[in-house]
Image 1: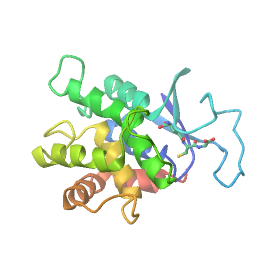
Image 2: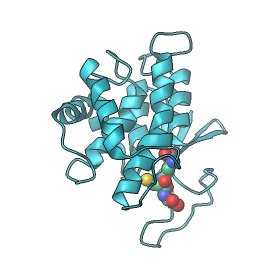
Image 3: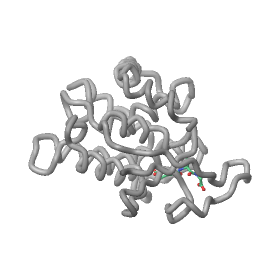
Image 4: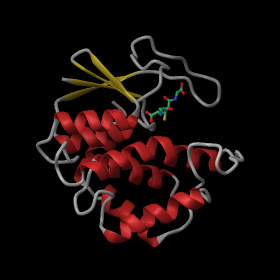
Length: 198
Ligand SMILES: N[C@@H](CCC(=O)N[C@@H](CS)C(=O)NCC(=O)O)C(=O)O
């Protein structure tokens, strides 16, 4: 049984979406976290090393960080083929897009959102203006990041784009708008939205 440590309307919400896609046995454990306004508190029940969400526990085995949780869950629950397994076509792309999410995509968007200047060549990531053409080119070749099949990588990227849909942080793109529509139209997304408040 998977326990998802969750706070509504956070990065943990998309793991309800993923767990629904996987048809995995899971329970949601609502926890508090610190919040941007200086409020909130780390919940001692949350096994994440910084008291953040998401984290999962698989019968006591803890996994934290979105990209690691996505890989762990799709490897463990392969029935609906939501992530290519080792040796399958698309595995290399899958791992690359998941790592890129954590190492490049999130830092790029957060630095733009926070108006941080990131000098070229010194950080491990590039700016949104370099990230977006790469993702748009990829999604022009096929409907999903790994090609024809939807994967947990799409859960992470499309839900992030949905969050920034009306923000100047995200440059307007019909390719991205169609991608988000395709992903959020999935029945598992609606089920996750219905369950996310516990
Ligand atoms: N890199 C982490 C980020 C997790 C994260 O920052 N989560 C936010 C909620 S969206 C949080 O728990 N914030 C509380 C805190 O920073 O203490 C991941 O992708 O899993």
